[in-house]
Amino acid sequence: MIHIDQVNEPENFNSRVRLRGRRFLRTNPHPTSSQWRNHRYWAEIAPALHDAYGGICAYSRSEEHTSELQSRQYLVC
Image 1 (tube, rainbow, N blue to C red):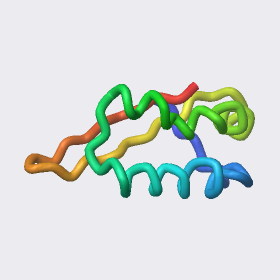
Image 2: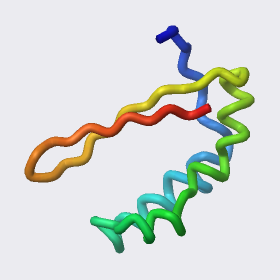
Image 3: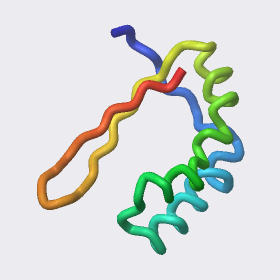
């Protein structure tokens, strides 16, 4: 694993990803796999993230709050 400095989020991240994602999750707090497929907002900014990180993969971790805390890890290239 290599160290990667965090960069600022893309200019349109809030409107294209964060707000739309929160709105979706408010109405679908436990989405199914098929529901997720129709709401992959992050994919719309993947090229901007690729450019921002100079083509280097970025690693992210998120936690799901369920009866047992689960952690998912993602690799974005």
